[in-house]
Length: 373
Image (cartoon, rainbow, N blue to C red):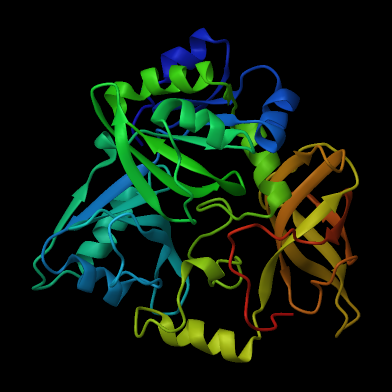
């Protein structure tokens, strides 16, 4: 994972930093409630410069990607895009990323550290196509802006902000170089990913703050994201889950034709029958819970007490004034109001209780077409 060009700036601002590999990212700038409030009712600014990037170019780039990926690629025009997936033959998620068409080439923005594996996976399927695959993470240094005042803040930098749908992007200028802006989900809500490259990332960060954005760290990000019910690559989505289990209906297309894992995805959409599904659970206390905390309950078919789910992301919820978590729960136990006992990954004693609460509807998010319980 590349080192954030903003790391020294964050440390000088007094941010509490989280070591991640050879880099460090801001956990908080000292006021989590204020950072959360900026994302909910103002404009919160996040450092995403550690994200990876892959560029696919060449005469056959669109055909190559369309044949492999779960979402539509052929037919995209410059400035269009969407979340996309590379699945394995069993229909489970290998890679989740944002794809943008930049005319003659395609830009794939990945989770931190995921670009080399995605590049290698694409290369495995590259035979005689006229394409070029490149890891362009050293050119990619995006910032993320979210909140109802975000459009005004961004307009202070770019002059005017076009009305974009999710996945769409536009190019403009900042200082002495290009600026690329993409409409994406940021911490669970529609926001903007803004990329001026590593050399101008510091200047862009400072200008956005001058325009009214508030710096925010990972703690506030997770508070907003978990409240919105948004799964995140690596934390909540890996090769153990099908797209529908992770509620990734906006990242695949049922009518685009064949792709790796397509038959499994289509069968699930037609017949349902998933063994687990991502749900939102409210916790009866506000102590942090680690990934892998188990949800125990009574199996309605056997009447035996057993493990029925696992937590993948925990955060403090300001709207609920308590803990909130994303968890995968087994079928027949996913209804709102279902309660569980919590047990830590390596523990045996109770760590509290959890109850399934409604998953919020997110603007710009696709909804499932079938029944999954």
